[in-house]
Length: 118
Image (cartoon, rainbow, N blue to C red; front, top):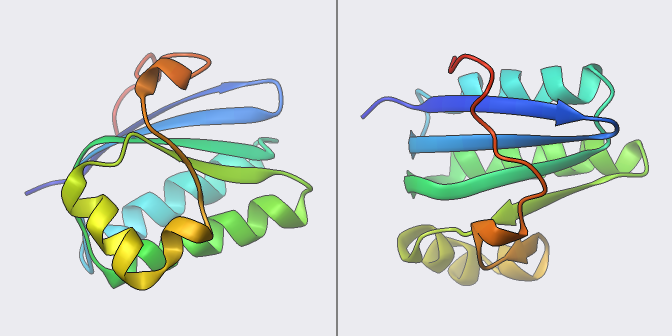
């Protein structure tokens, strides 16, 4: 399954909507998108995970790396609406206590997707 990513930036944050599977093959694409958002001035990354079907350890490492970069800029990274399969990985690894998690996409400040999917 391919990975689709769309993002939208406002002031000091970016909403990144991800759909598909984040794995060894697709994680570099997500990494690039998150680094670009931070390089473009975002300090806070809001990742809409509501359409992510699977995320392996490579994907988790990309998210952790992006969170570290955001925190170095005095920002943060939030994961929004992870599906049960992704939530289980977060719980088993203990990363549910590391990431800021939001239950619903209702908490998104803007809707991602106005930029072309990459």
